[in-house]
Length: 115
Image (cartoon, rainbow, N blue to C red; front, side, top):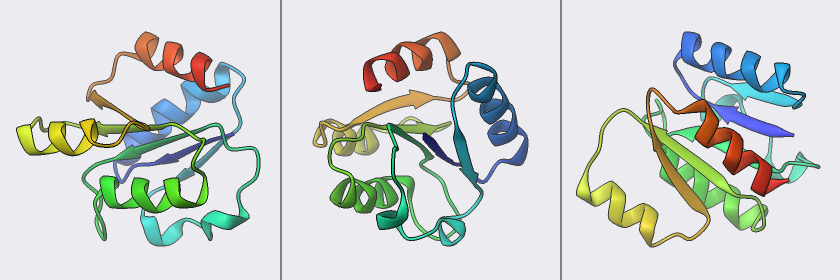
């Protein structure tokens, strides 16, 4: 299962549709508060999370997720590049940073490695 957390409805819906079309089970959420307790997820093999969320940063959400699911890779997506974010992602070996609009083929390669 892929967990997709992004507050942009159009982007989230389009990405989820592509993932589902490729045969993935996708649980999609708009806000971190919408996500059930992380301990309740089974069979998760990837988290895709937007950096710019309403209640908490994607990086903070990814950190909490990683504590519960340490073997699951995380793809952090953002529109805004920054040296600070690059450094924060580099310090965490479980995160790959992709920029919107994302290269779906690159995401496909990351998903294949995650399974």
